[in-house]
Image (tube, rainbow, N blue to C red; front, side):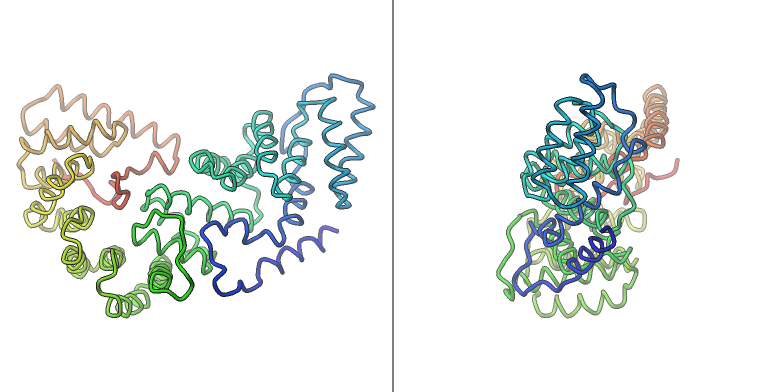
Length: 430
């Protein structure tokens, strides 16, 4: 039974998708042809007392519960899902703390596109088994389908941090949903990290590349243009090149991107995306040239200015300084612009002017360790020994806390545009 089900799932997910079928909401539709089989397999394969911990003692006679639960599992295993639902509900009425029962109820509801019911069931599972990462992921997948983006992202990331079942298909779906949610939220660097890892691990397909293209072009929308349109061709092409870059195939990526920018030189953010790729390939002079081309197309672009300033930091901070200053003028409420301006000023030893810029960034990002390290240096140079000591002590404390937690969110910081991570920069030495 399990072999047949797993084979059906593999066959279904490898079918070629028809032209024009691409959709950002594809993630679960991508596996819908096999979802009933797949998640029943999960219910059979993953549920065990070890997975969920010991359930609490029954509130009714154990014999009634034992009979109903056995009948529910048998109905599930033979695909009599209507009977299984009825029997699980009866068993759960007798033993509401039966985590395995809620899990099976949730997977059946999910398979039937009853995402509200699935979400409620998986909520019960994580309450009863708070260390079960797969249950958090299933809750996140359900919330994704319901359009509860913030909750879905939170629970997907929590589940993956706790650890997933080793099924590669579930991991692929979870990672892609996470990438989509980060892209929608405008957290482009984090989205690139997730989707780039999928490319690196051989998980890419046209849908992964399309979302990666939207991320690279700093597009936070959910809509998908008509197949064959200029928007679709550019976005898919940019995503393909970015995927090649994630696989360290920089020469292939560069050649592909050269063709794109020559064909679509005025497309919004295309030079920016090429500049980021060239930065990853360590061709910094070419990257700066592309960011400047983007500014010709979009003179008000703040993020390209920040990328130029970040690229020139430490190699030619004096040349990078005007771009950071312009970014602050254009977007005074962008805290990363103040951070970067402060870092550049500190690097050219203008520590007095760097301090207020870094303090603005510190208020916006109170847990970012690098800001405190830079402030400690600036305060020290300004003779403010007590302030320097406090900044360095905070740096050490936050660093230790981050090392303990080791979550993706605590390791990185993004500006409101989400295009440059503070991890791209290093504070100057004393």
